[in-house]
Image 1 (tube, rainbow, N blue to C red):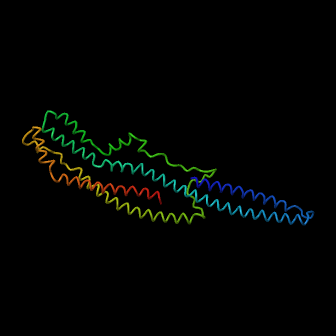
Image 2 (tube, rainbow, N blue to C red; image 1 turned 180 degrees about the vertical axis):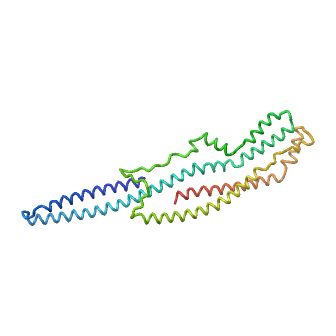
Length: 292
């Protein structure tokens, strides 16, 4: 923005000087049109010399104005393109990336909570049938666990952090009302070359993003399969005795001591780390778009 304002100010200054030179030229030409029969030869020579000087000065100022005008147009185009890219990146972050980041941070939380509570429910139903009413309330709460609605409610509670801010607006300078990318002849070829480069880079990024996305989706499905195992039913622990000590003994012997539990947790942690790195690659594409 500062570069654009600086070049535009120089363009306005050069235009003012050019107009001043044109006025001087018109004034000098008007004098040259006066009757010359009563003007001495020396004065005629001086007038011709003055006219030539003004013409040279006008040519220099015309060239300076054209140069500054071209710089101003290029700077304004660069400012507008950067502004649009920045707004698009900020919008994508608040509308898409934030939601994905939250999903990444709490992945498996609802499924794990569901399994833990259902394990508790299964044990309580077998220990005390008289507590069915309270357990039914808890079971209903578990059934109503919904990651999407919980996430939406959480984001609505803190709008300042999760709602996109106002877009950056174009700040015009000293009467310049052009607020779109200008494709005038001096910069048309440059813009077309840049457009082709952007198209090529975007196509490459799209292919890379699709490949990473497919891998990430497959990994996510694997993690979801891991965290949604319906292993919360512990009714087998209560087949012989309903005492607390019997439950502890049975659980420790049949459920918690299984060698597969440690292996499953290790595999899950490794898969989660792979999924997280895939998400990081996806988010990097947003910054690549801003850079190009």
